[in-house]
Image (tube, rainbow, N blue to C red):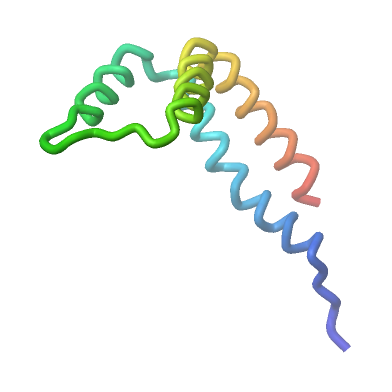
Length: 94
């Protein structure tokens, strides 16, 4: 019969396909400047019309806090993404 294909093989394949994407994301985090990103975020965050209603204020504050933390530590996060993608690729390609 044929070779069996398990769930772990599927997970391995998905992680192998995601490694280059995580690597590119890490490079972008290391190379892009924070002020360009915040300028783009301010332009996209403007409200054109209507009333903006905050439904879950606490959740939005937590998301903003984590987002600002990631922006202030973007070099560390980018380096971690590069290292993890390289390790996953080397370990799982065999």
